Length: 85
Image (cartoon, rainbow, N blue to C red; front, side):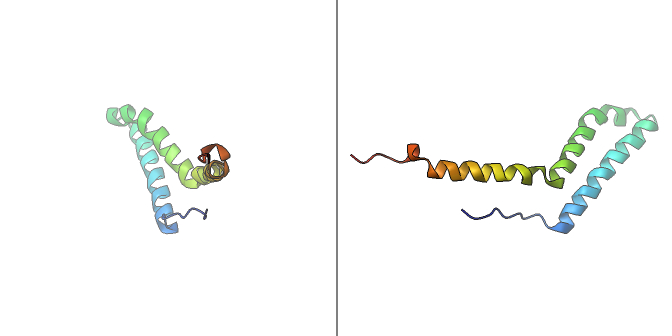
């Protein structure tokens, strides 16, 4: 089993990171300015953007190794192999 490859380039990572923070700051600015639409969107948009930033910072890579370990264990398991007989 080979190592997983990631198709997101470093530049695309930083663009996504910066845009996510821009969305958060725009919503906060709009809410502080008293715009009702920004206040209504904040409970949905801000947690979503924070989770996206966290995912971009490597949460998916930390748990990806667990996926590979589970795949390797499943491939080596004798329970999955048909019995000869």
